[in-house]
Length: 407
Ligand SMILES: NC(=O)c1ccc[n+]([C@@H]2O[C@H](COP(=O)([O-])OP(=O)(O)OC[C@H]3O[C@@H](n4cnc5c(N)ncnc54)[C@H](O)[C@@H]3O)[C@@H](O)[C@H]2O)c1
Ligand SMILES: [Zn+2]
Ligand SMILES: [Zn+2]
Image (cartoon, rainbow, N blue to C red; front, side):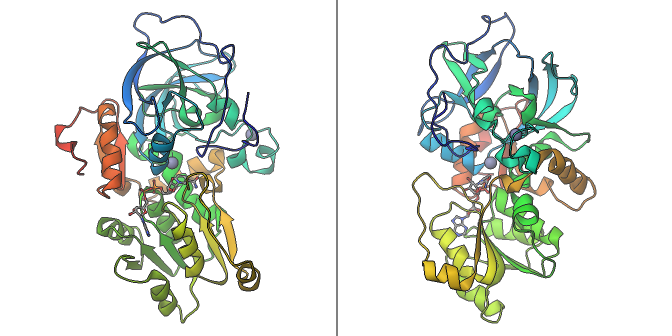
């Protein structure tokens, strides 16, 4: 059923062939049961809001009301390029919700509990999970290839991105894909923990393990990059250099703790960072844009024996060239960063606690709340740099003023 070599594909890529006998739908629609969700019918087209009916809840599953869902660049990449042929798919992988109903084997969650979705499940018992690497949990393909919904109009089975599908009023997810949190923080802030915060703060604290006093450069200060900046601040970096062509992003980075900003369209970031550091370069350089050329730039921004962290998600086939002699002689450490190397059951509650203590700002990243029907406007605003994050609140009214993508 699974394509070859796809373990840990997470939100990156899927290649699955489901035979018609697999992922069966349950009983037909119970009148009055169902919800609306933003569905990728075909890659490259705007999402369509559809009415869908759930199949019967399985014993390990949880039925959620989605309270809020952030719109991440990875949703846009999947919307444009698809998920290896899987579809139609409810997009969205950064969401918070409330438990409505639990399957018969779910003993530790009850209706009314608040949860944050994890785009990589944490089963707790696979090879990676027992080694504290739940961000590579082997159950990702299992959760991502369950079709939980049926399109009321077309009758199509409909999948959920990363097993979550948070651009929706409701979701049916496996228990291993959610983490319960006990907090009064607003849902739109909690939602961001599911991807941007876990990835950004995790890149700084888990993947790179920034040492206090370090010089940190962050290339790309969108939704995720802002949280790399905050993670560097929490880690005690002495200088945090935020690099982004959009003024609004640079200003937000300053508010989040950046000590210096560079507009890469008017200055050579590599030269500026070298000048700042006596010719050495940054101790840590994070690529948080779209990978490719900016990853190479991050490599060049970094000092010898420094750490380069690749956070941005490239499209399949993107290549970056490094001189192998340089890699050897400079001893730069080039680290991939998937989901901020996050251990979601440990880290989501930690991130909530940091936010509650006022040491991590979540509110500043919520640029605007939008209705489900305005989901495509979120992609427009993302493209024109108008927002840090648009957050879908399914109960929010449609806003005519958003048409055109301004914040
Ligand atoms: N590693 C992971 O697990 C993971 C998780 C979530 C997102 N991502 C990826 O991280 C990246 C960032 O996601 P996001 O949601 O913050 O996207 P975003 O669109 O909000 O932010 C990208 C930022 O990069 C800036 N940028 C564009 N070109 C640049 C350049 N040449 N130099 C410097 N900055 C530049 C943009 O102005 C923007 O602020 C995306 O590639 C996304 O797919 C990875
Ligand atoms: Zn994401
Ligand atoms: Zn696992």
